[in-house]
Image 1: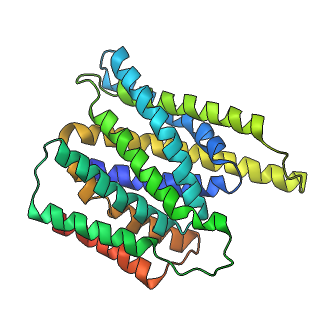
Image 2: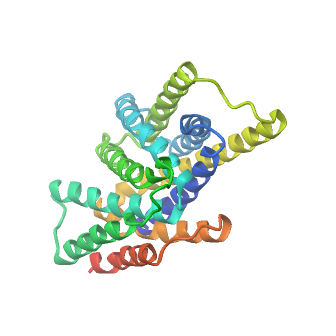
Length: 289
């Protein structure tokens, strides 16, 4: 069951990130997170109600803190996915997250085996292979920010996961409810800040722009729904599995994401980066020994 829940979380998170990146091409990342936040919150509220666990104010408060941290991570990961290629970005997020989570797990007292050490070393090498790309000197600077944004997102999501993992026992899904509420609050502040500080908008064709914005809003809401479902699976998995389980199964997500990017977005990656994704997948087998 823990493995299934982690895989479900990885599947829904991967699809959510891809959709968030697509929506970010039409809307600011803060707006994408803000539009998806209420949908994700509704999903989690339904799950919390179905669980029938007494309301936990402290669990909710802990979740809000986690959500505020996750807000910036979601904005970073959506921006990174909008730059793409999505398989590359997902691999960096997953492999870097595997290293961060594993280190946190080791510090927290989880078992340290030779297989896990080798698996993590493979992830570190994979990240190096994934982030290397020979680019033309005239390539726009904005397109070079994908890997750093992915690394920042991985660090933020690790902190988010650690906070949720240490939520009060017996709080049920109320800590996750608080997290989604925190994301909504954080995204609202970010959207307000963006609107206050924006320096004009591109006029363009109003009809085309309107259709683009409507499509972006729908895609952002879908991303929020998938993210909410994935988060429910994540919290349930945390209850019954070791933190390291998330690390050793992390490479599954970029393989799925790379397939989605290739089939639906016609995105390509270099041979070296493909080798990096496969190396990260091999780390799953090695680290589980």
